[in-house]
Image (tube, rainbow, N blue to C red):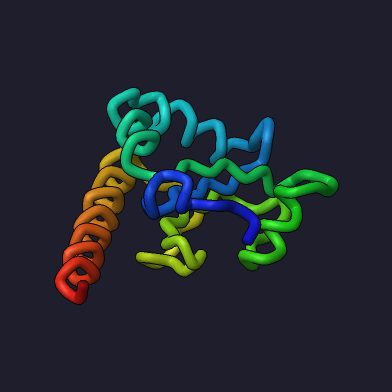
Length: 123
């Protein structure tokens, strides 16, 4: 397993796959979406945040890019994953607004909460 989401008690993973230093879309995301400190705090507290550089020549990030089927030198990608590395909701690529990102966070947290309640009810 390339990452260990169970380090935060089984929290879902927020994975951002971007070029570093980044092209136009990646820079736009940083400026327009991830400059919102409330959004960033929520990602850091509710998820296991994972930043993956998709334009690296090798190493850990390159292995994750290959394993997850992402492109090198591609557009920015946001994925929300469970501890088994399965998408909780479909991945998105390209431009995504702050509002759309917040909506996706709410949707993932609702799905995650429902899964955890279901799991608790089975015990």
